[in-house]
Length: 349
Image (cartoon, rainbow, N blue to C red):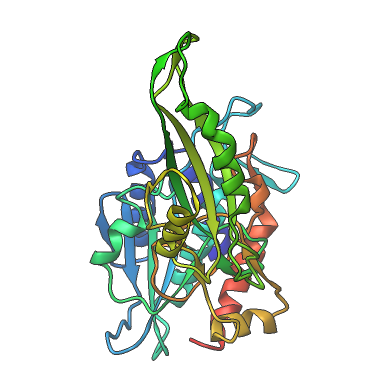
């Protein structure tokens, strides 16, 4: 049965070290799945992808995507992170929940419908790398090599509820300039003394458009760095500002707003991690709601940020377990996830 094969695939993947940029061996294992099921595939770096047997370039294409890279195991682990043991219904192991369960469930879904005759849309399965670091060889780097994508399911742990929107992220570096000097001499241009003004300006930033699913744009000061000696006034103060963006603003608009609002130099590290959403009336969402699932907005970032089409974040597992010690996913979550994915596409494929 394909569900049991998918669980075994996840156990195999857990046993293979697949930190970001080092996913070549897990990519090999995913290749072996397609080979075993006689499904032609392509590979670019550590990204493995395939299309359905009846692929028709005239039809719209649904991307099924999840990642097979993992973060490093944290020091609080009490178990071997590479030992995929099943105990009391829990499948343990690094990457089991984020996002191995979703990945193997989507691969099972794709395999189930691979030879579906006369589909209403194409299926494109992409098992991708470097998601955890938003690397150049992640989904964003693969997209130019893929067929045109019209809509997508991105597999991440959502308890199989429908994440119809995801906040984007812009990290800003702000610099307060001043005049360096010896601490013993007068200095009316000490950049450290300007920090309260900048902090107050950050606190006063407001974005009026509030999303019904993602809420407001959240602006958070996360780092301040300045000075190296007790007797030297530094020339500048460095700040880092984390901004989580709802679907009503582009990242460029966020950048323009901060530059106008803050009395210091402001620059964005990157503007590519944008917010994502899918209309609640989209057939995918309507099908999920009809099957009893609820919708919500996700505060966490995924490869959805690379896509320019409507996308739904959906997968087995619980986001709160991600990156935790002794990570696990329930076996029945995978079983139910595969069954739900198949039911979700049944009436629209």
